[in-house]
Image 1 (tube, rainbow, N blue to C red):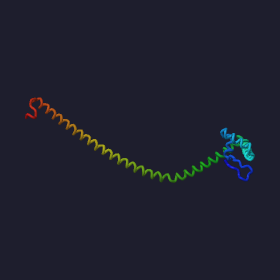
Image 2: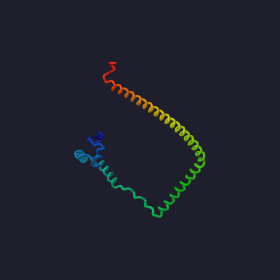
Image 3: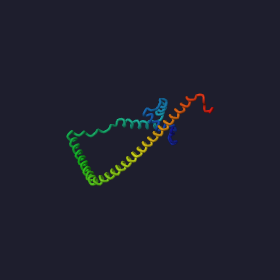
Image 4: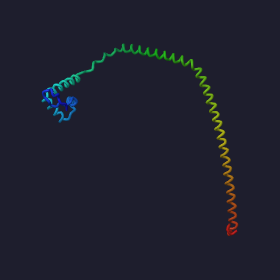
Length: 179
């Protein structure tokens, strides 16, 4: 709480302005509100200040926005809309003509540059395709060679097993240790 200057006749403590604002707007709890109401009864200077602030609040509550301008008649609105539409169309046409003229002059050069770039890309793609086809053919040949080798190993292993089976049936009493 603030204190009044020692030059004033009463040396009582006065609540700060922020607390009075909360009081005016009814944002204080009941005990604090009762304390401030009691202070107002005993302090004419605070009562006068709070009354001024309350008056300002009342005037602000009474204040109304000024009325809007009268609306345009339908005919006036249409005429203004047509004017704006014509201005916009003129602006768009001017920009379109300027843009088109600028593009027309550079279109041939751009087209030539694009054709060269596309031909280069096409050639690069053809080279890549040829290299990939060669790699695929080499891979297929390797797969075929591996398959042939695997089949050869399988046939040889089968023949070996057959010979071993024939030998074991021919002399069941003889074991390799007895020979």
